Length: 113
Image 1: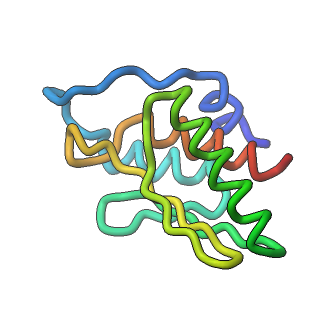
Image 2: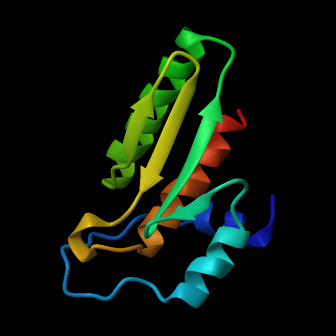
């Protein structure tokens, strides 16, 4: 695990109700470099997770929902038989915030268990 990921995992999401700018592209690129396999697509970060079977896929999706609830920051999930696409964006600012990267790092740590 690299230092960017370690730092993100230790943080807690901060409430965001708008009125702030999305993080700059230079910071987005730096933070993406610290995450494994996440991509920037149309102003959002996303990653496809693949599993052995349907049960593992839904167990993971439920665990992601638990993390999302604890952080009060919720991704879009597209769940298939053995895949789960997770997409983060901060809707209140119509762009990316540090919360998106905090949650992405926590989801990666969850997947590694």
